[in-house]
Each structure stands twice: as C-alpha cells, then as structure tokens.
Image (cartoon, rainbow, N blue to C red; front, side, top):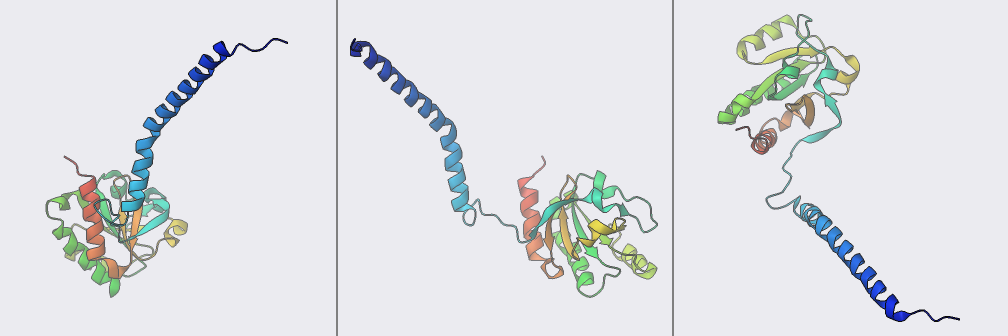
Length: 201
C-alpha cells in the first residue's frame, strides 16, 4: 500500500487555508462596515444625533393620496395634492370642523408661519370625509385663502383615516398621523426634521 506523499499535501492544504482566510477577510471587509453601522444605528436610534424624532404615529399600512379619490366640494377631481411635489399638512374632518378640529386648523396656519423660509415647501389642506355645510366652506375660504378644501370620494380608504392631521410626503403618501391635540409642537418638530433631511438646494 502506497503512503501519501505529505511533502506535496502540506503545501496544498496550507494554500487552501490561506485562500479561505483571504475569502473570509474579503467578506469581513465588505460586511464589516454594514454590521458596525447597523449596531451603531441600533444603539443611537433613541439618543444622540441619529435619534428618531417623530412625534406622530406612522401610518401603517402606507396610504397613497390617490387612493382617497379626492374631490373638490363641487365634485371635480382634486389633483393638487397628487401633482404638487411639495409636502402637505392634511387635516381630516368628518362633516364639520369645529371645536378641536377648528383649533387644530388655526394651529396649522400658525406653525406654517413658523417654518419661515421653508414654508414655501409646504401646503395645507382640509379634507372632509363627508360633505360639509356651505356656510362652513365659505367661512374657511375667506379665513384661510391658501387652504386647499376637499373631500374624499372613496368611502373605504376614507373610513381608515382617523380625524386628525397627517403629513403627506412629496411622493403622495400619508406617512405620519397626529391627533388634533398634537397639532402644535409635535407636528412642527417632525415637519421641520423632514424638511431638513430632504433639503432641496
């Protein structure tokens, strides 16, 4: 029986080990930074400069504004929120916007002013889930001339919308929700953060 020649096996085995170590090293170099980033994000997500600042509640599942089939109060298709690539602050009401809703609407205008030069990147809208009274619409049209007024034409998606305020991103998706009593500092902090992280020239 012939004994294997270890003088040729050892170099081959050593080469295979070296090749494996080189391969592991390549993977480590490629995946290492990703792993470190993941760990750092996990550690700093609640503190430090990478802290998540959203005060609102994420809208899940994501809802596209197109699905709401928005209509003007005359019944025409309201496409402004779909075609305008700015951020929008939407206030959702049932068939009337008084008391908490009315106060939130007033607050929306105040915080819009507080955005200073970034205010041009944001528009406001009041969207009813049901028909509103003519008197109320006329009042808001005079009181808030830059406000977009409309209603939803799709009952099923509209039913999933809680009355309150929503941030609509430039891609036409509702991303964050706020109760009427959160329309103030919480909403202001979030929209400022979003505008800062998506700064346009």
